Image 1 (cartoon, helix red, strand yellow):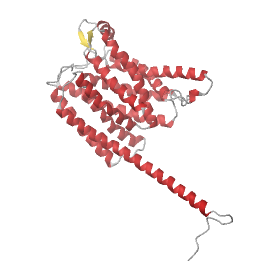
Image 2: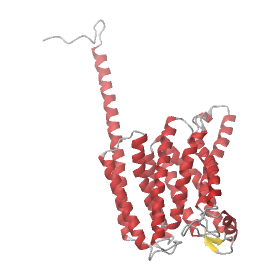
Image 3: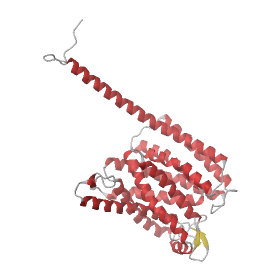
Image 4: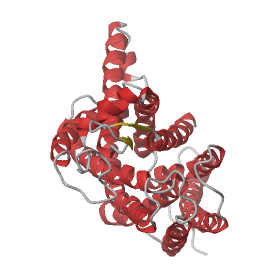
Length: 383
């Protein structure tokens, strides 16, 4: 029970910390004050948090092995196989990199509440990819839930375009096109996240690797791929609204340290984000290993209310009734999808209980009729 709680709380904290860093300003290398727009660097901090899981795993395994009691094979952090090919975790790390850069760029351009609501669209792609790669059956209830979620997403994106004209206080660009671009990036990023979730589910359930170790290796590969991509994006000319830096590129790495020196407050959300990412990604893989990708996305949707409440409390955005309607439609879709999962669980539990019941009845009948010298499998007497 504590794993889903950690997952929801740290996930909400991650979003709030990233949005906080997006609202902070600092002096760039050209002397101008700009907001902290560095999605690639924020992604690197996320992978740094995952790499901390690798460090924690190695330290825990070292001390548990020194005891000589075999505790390293039973502890929740270290239990699982250690003989596996780490290169298999390169693909999910790459997919996570692509999705995270798109997500963080979208978060910079749009509202924090809309960001979390639109992430529910991952449930649609998880259902489709799960049916293709995991042979999971999609019933009519699942399809109706996906259609309802699509309607909710359409409502949220439509109202965001309209309210950008009056609720633009914390937006870097008050134009509706910029908000729409951010929302579309968030939705498209869910395709890569859904592919990552399905791959992780198939790989983790096919092996008994420790989720802490798997998270750590993803962090290692993620940092390597992010470093390679960072060199390219550092020199990639980019149009507005993606070029809020000194050189007009996608992510000007030369502005990072000057901004952090001129505004030391930037260190707080970024350091907290690294720590929170370690717990979040460990809990995420644990849910996938012992449950499913769909349940991970469903649990991820629980933090919408928490993020929305904090956005109002911090005065990052104003209340909008149409957004509430879109949120209600989204919840109707997720509840319908969740009920479909609960219905499958209910049927499997009932079927298992009936099998055990009939097995017990057969045993009792066999014991009552088994007398010495009398066969219990003779044919019935003819009448």
